Image (cartoon, rainbow, N blue to C red; front, top):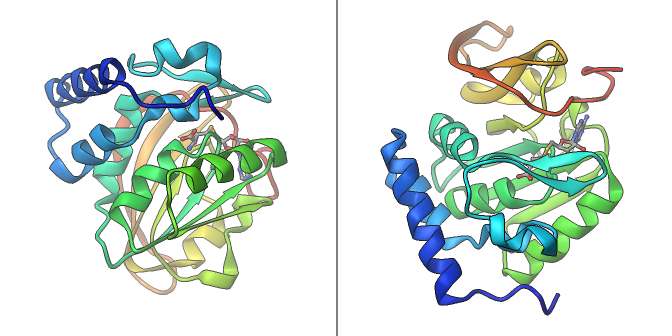
Length: 220
Ligand code: SAH
């Protein structure tokens, strides 16, 4: 991974990106400082390093994408992660969102269904020294029962509905951020579990477009 070093120029672009996110309304300084710290360019294919600090998604292989920085910031801010929290992420992809969560949480558990993406993400996260992250290959619509319950759950692929196992693995008063909709567009939902029998309070952050959440409780 000799291509991946940080430089003053890339640091400067990262600062510009964070200022841009402030301008777009992101206020949580914990989120902004995580985004200032983490080299997003480590998480993109070498040919896209130059574009890593622009505010749009980029291809990461296997037909998948690393989310747009604004969406990462918006979802992370809405998740309101504290340093005592156990967090579950579904859709590791590049591992970038996972690194942001690892800066804010106590432990992060992330599930990715495509082995080569998971393996590459694990390498980058190791290189950056994150020891509070576990990544597994599998169907994230089933959650990760072994480490449940979770204080926070973030789903980074578009779901047809809220997967039941994820709601079950969330603590009462816990928050899940998940894009829900059809194949072409979704609404970014902030779901708070209000009781053990699965009652929820739902708020929408607006429209978005994600790759499909595929699996037993997702798209078939
Ligand atoms: N959080 C990622 C975004 C990746 S895009 C990042 O920061 O780069 C969404 C990812 O969800 C894709 O990698 C896709 O393979 C994965 N995915 C889709 N359905 C899944 C499922 N059921 N379980 C786990 N991962 C899934």
